[in-house]
Length: 114
Length: 118
Image (cartoon, rainbow over all chains, first blue to last red; front, top):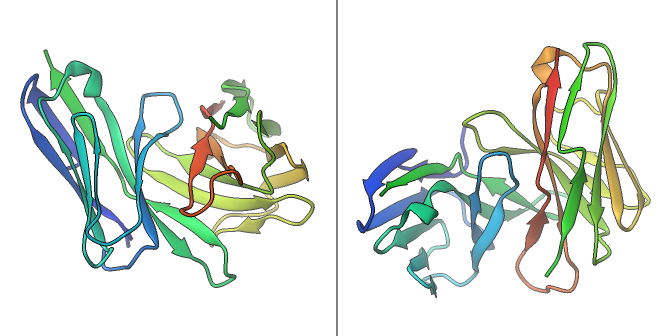
């Protein structure tokens, strides 16, 4: 069972269009992060959201954390070909041993066509 | 910012051999590092948590004798895939938590190591 469900899995749009990627779970997370991964490289952190209802903006990217801290969304305005990549959400959970670990969604493969 | 380096970036080996992958935190000390595995078009699956000076904590279903993890210093963790087989071919990624960043669990990831077992 996937703890974090991302949708859509694949998205192909034209340059200039807007898009939203969703990350949903039945679990509550202490924080949620969004990463972007290029082929053959490790994920790069885009943002961390901690507070329920929090909204963060990073240029044309807007991230929102759900009020119940179970879901999040990533909205991109006026997408550009440089936005192409795999977008991963990751939720932080406390393990039984008391440590914290990240659980990743399957990712959304975004292609922005010029 | 925090930098994590992985080596090698790509390795091809014969079935039955062992392969070691290194993960280094270049500008900070990491008491905890994490090893992930990523199959094509799949997400990152946590394999184990590497703790400096103590045994690694493995996730359910990950064979500790197959994937040996050593975290001998505050800047280096190694993952050794023993007696590798073609099904072990994957993209292995390490990450480390920079203690200079308090609060939320912020990880810095290495660039990954692509293992191909023939």
